[in-house]
Length: 263
Image 1 (cartoon, rainbow, N blue to C red):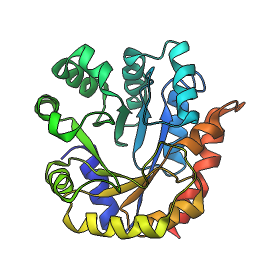
Image 2 (image 1 turned 180 degrees about the vertical axis):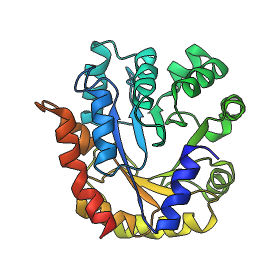
Image 3 (image 1 turned 60 degrees about the vertical axis):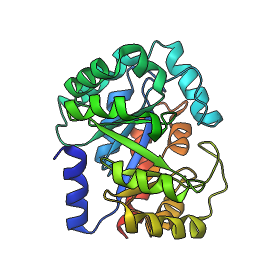
């Protein structure tokens, strides 16, 4: 049982919902990433999704696109990301860290080498938004060998046949994209998403968390009614942009969401 499984088991025992913030590694500065991660945990994060900046983030909206551009301009490559996780682990041995990004940087390194280096740094899972489940066997095999969870995505347009496969193959947790579109869009329909989430949770072997469109305490609480947890990304990234004290701002942003989920 890895950190992700342990964390969700504890959340189930405590009857609590997972709060999963996303931040881009290297933004708003190279030095801010690790302090922001610690501040998010102190504010109630259960899992941290750490974005690996990519030059063509096609699933992301303008906020995270610009965040990735800034991070890349500062030199926030995969080596930097691993070093951030390694540094984070010096003080936090328990909070799961999931890298979220795109397939190309993994392919360049090779699946086996990437998995070894990620686990050695302290990474628990990887979510690759442009890796279809039908083409994931090589990566899954390499990741499983090292104990690295391959987090999968489902969406409102996922067919029943594909959803069955996702639910069978899912590791760690299943990430439900609340609407068809890019990150940061403002068109969340919590009722429609809740109906779909209820059906997915009924057949999933792992917890199901919801992301996309969650921007504040109210939207987090609404989506958590039918999900095992929620992911907040673009709104947090936007809040950190230009912050004089990014770690303090991260805590200020996340605390109300934690309170709403626990209410």
